[in-house]
Image (cartoon, rainbow, N blue to C red; front, top):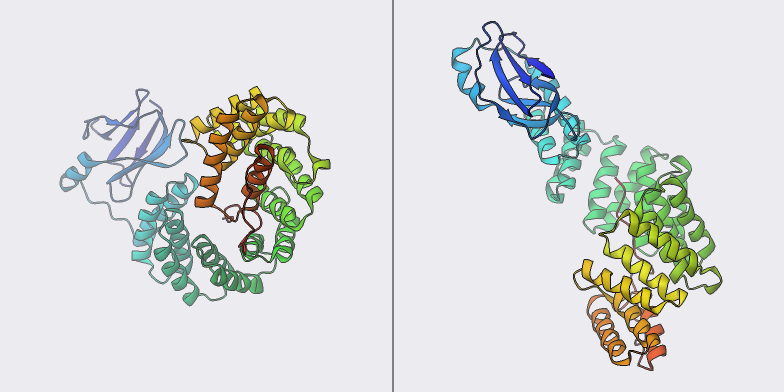
Length: 409
């Protein structure tokens, strides 16, 4: 036995056992009032909800305070037990604690369920509405999220977090102008609100205002210097502005901050293998970093793609083909990043027909999926020059010079 949890009147208790089950008993007589409830793993702590319908606890290998099992047997027994008279405030406090626990565990549906109970009790509480709005955004319901956040702002227009949260939802939904307006309001109320600064930087980057986007992200990074999401976004914006050395410094810093993150090694390796400024390329180091990324995430096709590109830059055509083929297998066929480099590697190795096949695949994919992407167009041009084939047509207006990371939350 690991832990027990009691009802407020002390009449019933729930007990967690080493076999990964919990059971409910009469405290005075020891009579079981529920069958063993399977939890899936050992539970270190248990608690019973105020209405006697739910068990909560801390399960081994899972986040704390997860929803364990509906206590059907005890709920059916309620007519035979003395009623538990919990005050509305006690019930609200319990739902509040559970909502916070599920937020921490990233179980947003459970969090929303408890926040719904809180909204029923406190329908004009702007903080609760804001929290539920953010939870709705996490589960992909931006309409409900914006509705809750609008209500929270109406109730408390001086709450900078509500403005910032609505700006984030709008940014996630592609409403960039509305997002910038809300984030501006958040920063009027709280100029050092680093999330609002970072997300406004991301929004401005999407609008093409690259220099001001860098300014916003730099301000945010002065407050939270180790936020790798912001460093990554700023690095991409630096690339768009032609400041490759500054981009390199940011990618280097990300690896220093989070050396166990495969994406950190992969991003730096990609930069060193593909940066347009040939003086900054370092294929040998790129290959080392890409191998580390593959070691940390062997099932990530993107990391194998980077390794293949780095091997191509090193002149190891065979190793490049092996890594790029692995990338296509893991990525359900691959994309232009794989195919243009497969074409070039096969050509360099003497496989002209195979090279033409992959080149044609890359051209068709790029035309269909992302014809204005400058990176794909550059690889297309490079492969076309090697194979003696037509390059990409003259580019039209482009909405963005570089890809962007997801907004921060």
